[in-house]
Length: 224
Image 1 (cartoon, rainbow, N blue to C red):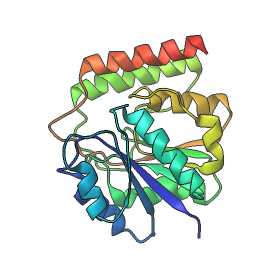
Image 2 (cartoon, rainbow, N blue to C red):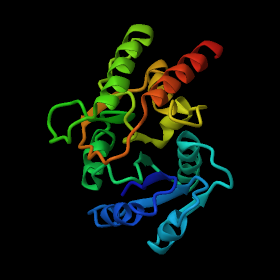
Image 3 (tube, rainbow, N blue to C red):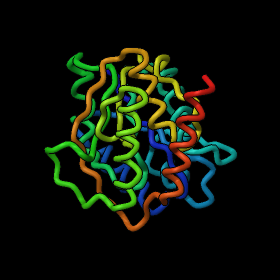
């Protein structure tokens, strides 16, 4: 049986973290779950520990990309064969982890990205601000980097552990999503997308946050 680690970055998610963990723990597969608490000021870490999962802590808030890197490096040191990135806010569906890892388990892909824009899943309405950020990013990636993916800002992904050196990202905050995709394509990894469900809450990314992502992506690309 392959060792599959689910890495969950978390910042002030005390209201949702327990239900997210319970859903993953209720799955048929025995996943190793790692929560990386990014210096939350609430009870996120305590509630995750009480749920019986591994909890790593940042002593300062470093950003989602940094939390994912901390958790991924830990998982690989512990012998992970496959690493899954999953959010702590309840937007993703735990039962769909099996859909995302399926192309890895069958040897058809090195890295798999979940997409909210592929047919096959019932979606909550994607908020206008999300569309205004994500769809232009997809077009920019296609134009400048030749990347043809429908959802370059999805936080639900999985990859084989031996692919990590080829996708290792430097962006500590939200631009890590696009950097991972760029690195995967640049290093000629076998990439797949699968449809996922995303359940939107009241909160969401501000448009200014999307502009920051675009700036970080292109700054990183041109200084490499």
